[in-house]
Image (cartoon, rainbow, N blue to C red; front, side, top):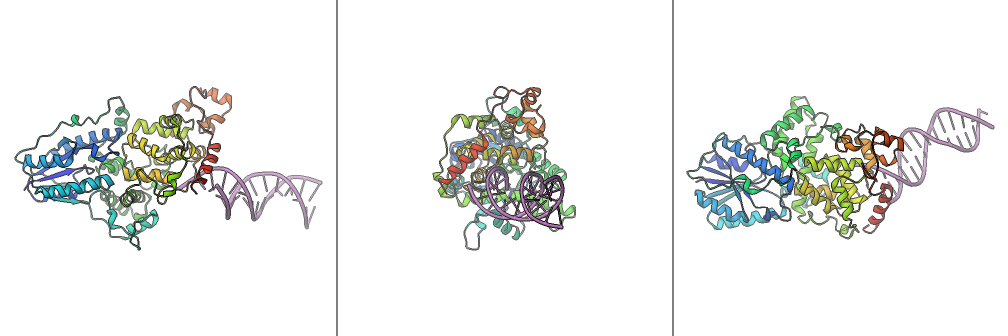
Amino acid sequence: MSTLIWFRHDLRLADNPALAAAAATAEPVIPVYIFAPREESPWSPGGASRWWLHESLSRLDGNLRAVGSSLCIRASEDSLTTLVELARECGARRVVWNRRYEPAVIARDQKIKTALREAGLETASYSGALLHEPWTIRTQSGGPFQVFSAYWRHCKELDDPAPPEPPPTTLRAPAAWPKSHPLDRLELLPKRAWPAGLEAAWTPGSDAAHVQLERFLEQSFDDYGSRRDRPGLRGTSRMSPHLHFGEIGPREIWHAARRYALAHGRHSSWKDSQFLTEIGWREFAHHLVFHFPKTPEEPLRAKYARFPWRSDAAGLRAWQRGATGYPIVDAGMRELWRTGWMHNRVRMIAGSFLVKDLLLPWTEGARWFWDTLVDADLASNTLGWQWVAGCGADAAPFFRIFNPTTQGTKFDAAGDYVRRWVPEIAGLPNEWLHRPWEAPAPVLEAAGVTLGRTYPFPVIDHAVARQAALAAFAAVK
DNA sequence: TGAAATGTTGGGGCG
DNA sequence: ACGCCCCAACATTTC
């Protein structure tokens, strides 16, 4: 009885419970990927994600070919119809997949499971994307957690997640392969020259994910706590897009970190390492979006629904383009545009600027990030923006307003990050790099900077903006 | 996983 | 020696 393995956000062969279950039968296995973006509307993949997906599917096909199989790709308006067609074409009697947790996807998958069973097919779904599925974690009173530290403490007290399954060494091919669309048919690559920066910055795919994880553990795991907040360094794991697409699973990361820590003599506190805590935030984000399914669009704290956000097309555009006049913000927004990624510290700074200096709705930020991030993930993006706007679970209080100059001075003291992404002010000395509008005229001239021409004046005065934000906050207090 | 305003303390200069 | 002031450094409160 052959089996369709329906790949989704689990584009890997190792640590893939659905694939392992399909392979375990020794019957034919038909790997399929169905691109049906309209089903995920309004959160169908953005531009940067599509680029990544294109590359990742190509790699997955390569990995499958290495074990005697291949990936069947379909563009579709309706995943259910396509699954039924595929099953008919190759005589499959069973469909298996790993679960996802976004509200719209859960609803779709539920319908598909029911319909497939009514059509006489067996179905089974598995847990592959999280250490702990959202409904398995409850507070003592039975509700979902809303405070990260309590949530993660609880998770760490549970049994360790099972070690990852090894990849299958061979997959039995079906007698007849179903017809596959060529990858280009999905039209995932952008028309413009955008991908050049993405290609230079990233290597998608499961193999690259594992190489990157090992490199991170060797080079940065020990110093992660002290280096992760400095965007000029390469101190973070850069696992986020790989995790989003499931090119690597959190169980693999958990056990790799454990192995590394124990091999280096840290037997007691490895679970408390800052790196695994960040994995915990990813888990928490999924926990929240599952239990509070409206939060991608609406603030979790209801009173924020009446926050007096402004409307300012020019301000939004300046932010998106990296032309706010605040170097650390502009550097972040340009890194995002060029590489599809932004350092997490800078996401907080740039996010705070949009929401609290420009007083623009956090949903605008979430939208822009959704289209430009290669790691755009509904759970993490929602948590991040609700955190920065102060309207989410365990969020930063609204009055915690980042000062872009102070943050720049603190976390990019040597100016490496700003100089890399805002080269037109690279000639400024460190003392003025994060506040060029205050630099003496001769300093600006010596650096070849003409404010208003080669680099913008600040779009808004931070001290004034801060007061306005606090006044606006009074409206919801 | 802030920042600014405000309060407190203590050292040193000075009459 | 003492009181007074200034102010930096640190702590606390407030937004």
